[in-house]
Length: 195
Image (cartoon, rainbow, N blue to C red; front, side):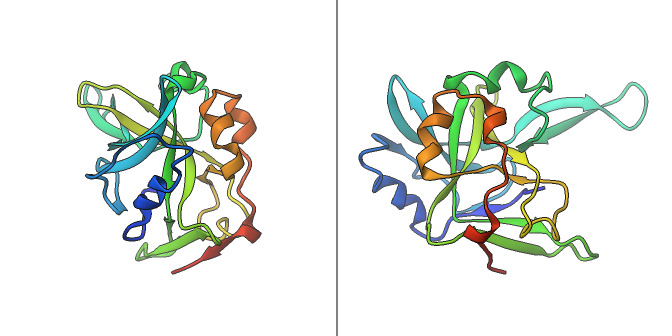
């Protein structure tokens, strides 16, 4: 499961070059190396305008602990089950959709040591995951959808990969179109392993 992604130095400034797409930029504190519970950049629609801002990566929630009667704090960064009660009430609403810009994402190697293998979309300094966001007491937070892995990712992580959007699908995702329709693996021939 992708729990680490990054943007190359200055890549988030690329979003500012989407001048005809994003009208407000509030991403000065976005990390270039993003881990769960850290600040990451997202793009969402507010009153008909695209806004780039930062939020915490992951939806905090409390689940059952290992021992009876105990609880455990959890942080969901990736959403695979769209029917889960934790997400189904927000995933269909356009106002809760967002784009999560990235340059590379990592999957841990399946062998001991758990080193990371990095993937990128060819010829795109910034690509976007299909994300959702919500308000929490702790502040706004986001996660992104996952799907079955493509042939490039599957040998490293056979269960899932992030849903990567084609640029022509950004508006359709933000408009609230059926989320299931976006859960196709990104074409592996348009991606590379970079480390």
